[in-house]
Image (cartoon, rainbow, N blue to C red; front, side, top):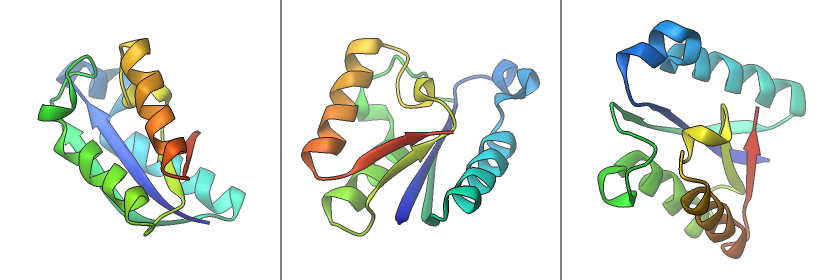
Length: 107
């Protein structure tokens, strides 16, 4: 399955606690290989809080656009809180991907 990967860190502290972009990227690559999926695009939002709306999250917008354009079959993230910290916003985004015919995967 062709997927888009989305990475996000909101603070330097997250990088120090093991949630940096490199850790997310390596984990997603290992997961995709183990599951037989192929990551065809990578997008990220660096220094952007997960509680922010979509306006400031260009990487997430671009990742969703690949599903909307049927370039990918879904989105993979390190953890769901990389999509959004706010549970309501997170569920809305997950529902949007599903509405577009895609799946969301979390490693």
